[in-house]
Image (cartoon, rainbow, N blue to C red; front, side, top):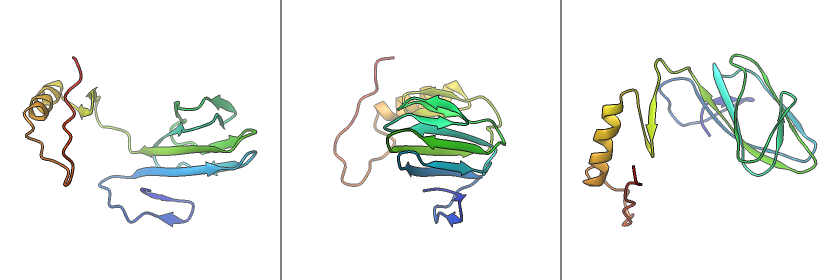
Length: 134
């Protein structure tokens, strides 16, 4: 979906090395993914997968060893997973609901902007989702 991997290049423009792969492994299949970006993680969508010999349960995000190739193996059932990654962040990040920032005060500002509906709308979308309880 994003980045370069296994001989394919996505047309999606990025501003730093970024990777987002949608992988579907048949039962018993394996896949070796080289260290395409400095940091990678695997999210299993519907079934467990072996990540470098360790079982990762369905719907879990597992971080791979930085700078190392990643070996994936499906068990007795097919598995769908996402491989995501990119450059290491330059500083810690703070996250609340859908907001991520290097500064907590920007998250507070974003929450206020969301509540006041100053962030614009997706064309054709009419539903407003209120902020969750803090």
